Amino acid sequence: MDRRNFAKSLGVKAGALSALAAAPVGFMATPLRALAKTSDPGLLPLCKAILKQNLLQPDERMLVATGYMYDEEYVMALLQAGAELGAAVMHLPVFPKWEGEKMVSGRTATHAKIYAEADLLLDVSMGRPPGVPSPGVGSGKFLDHEFKSDRQFMTRPGSRTRWLSIGGMSSTVGIQRYLFPTKEIRARSIRGAEIFHNGKELRVRCPHGTDLVCSLEGRTGHSQYGIADVGGRWDNFATAVVAAAAVETSTEGVIVYVAGDDIKDIEPRVLPNDKEKITLTYGSAGQITKVDGGRLAKEFEEYLASYNHPDITRLAHIGYGTDHRIHRLNHRVLFSDITSDMKHQFHHNAWGSVMIAMGRNNQYHGGPHANYSGLGLAARNAAPSHPHTALIQGASLWVDDVLLCDNGELTKEATGGV
Image (cartoon, rainbow, N blue to C red):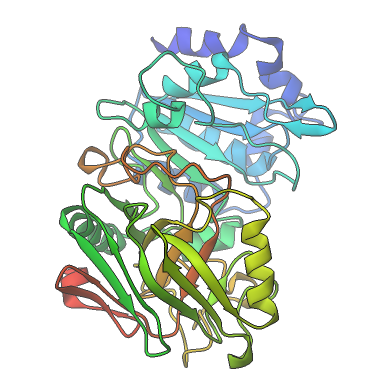
């Protein structure tokens, strides 16, 4: 499909796809040249740097997908940056639909086809208020293919699409500037994913009592370094992590969360003191059999039970953070030099923190073709949620006999000296 046909497909399909109908108030009354002059004079250079890092080329098809409410200045800066780099640039704001009293994504087969035809797909949540549906990129199965989901189809070997999400982990321009991806993070993340990919067993130990083991047999290594630089790769801007999906029935041992560790779905999410220590005991074919602790342990146990799904407590993936700019301080603070409002938002990116997620992991493809983006087709946990936790207080992690995290610090084996 050439530029003209690609543009036409956005303008004449379903009425709900009209970029004019979805534009913010005042959009058509404001000249394009004026819109490009944002309140942040550095926004256009930032967006252009992001597009260059994601290897946007002249005449490629660049699509910015958003919900029907979005950050006008940010989206316009992306569009202008792409145009100045010579790409065929489109914006697709997706209108929601209603299911009873609930507003959900209005994604259709037409949207799915347009997404899959992009060379660089930017899934942007900047400026989308809570409760407003996303554009639904990759969700469900609308296209005709052999995979379980359109997400798996778009990240398959041979896919042309480089897919970058912006805003979920990088919700402000300040975060994007501070945590702009680097070649060092890319190198050490790919290196770690290769070790996971070729490994057979993973073990985590902590001085506070954690001793967990699981199998990686047949599982795909996963890397995120914030860049979508090869076809079939999905990434999330401002992430830096290595991981793999454990064999579902293989997890054994205990996880002990102590003061300073992070469990996203309880309040407070950061355990405040040793009286709130939480111990999870694994057994029974990879499931949690016991939760011990105080009030927060009870809250977490009730949260997991609320899903009423047998796979919610099985591991979704496990790994470690690779961003040297995010680090614990005195074993109690996750960030040493980032503003306090970002504290713990990036727990799974932090250098040497061990990230443990539970529940759903079956939505990705992945493997060497995409620089190990994705958990692979063998990951098949279909639980309805994906709870995230992190062991920040001095965890050690091995794959087979290779020590990758040593008391919260990445080893040379993990980084290759980078």
